[in-house]
Image (tube, rainbow, N blue to C red):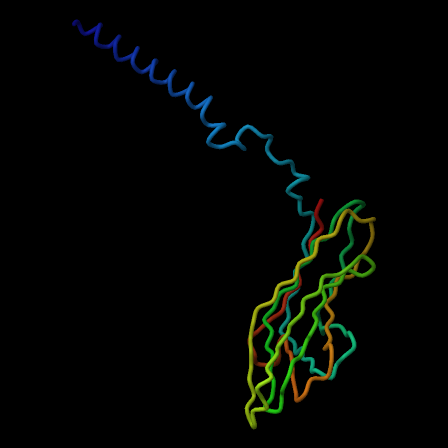
Length: 197
């Protein structure tokens, strides 16, 4: 076979291979990856962030089981002004510590509420139960992360207040305390508020 014949055979082989691979990809890729033929998501589906407000604090925030009416968590409030039909997405996060003293017995419930004034809220319950006490002179401390998120539908243009509230459901037997930070704790709580469309 001459040199031209070998080169021609190689070129024909490459063209045939590309043609077969292309045809297989065209017919098999939609079977293997069914979403490949769908339209890509629009910006409206994903949400475009028009503005973000991030607030972080380590100021003291403590509530005890006798605090049975809702009150604002100190230094945890943000105002945001939005355009017509924008949505608000808010996220509150922090590290809470629940402490119960040696005389504690039974249960306690604390509620933490992320609230968008005039629109709605999301509530998280922190619950502890132990019916084996009391434990004289023993204080037990439990620490966990918390995260509460809330996204609205489209809203009217204006200024909205986003805040966090908390309360104890009832006065427990013994002493129970919930804190989100205290001086020297090296812990913070954060509030992230975004306007999205």
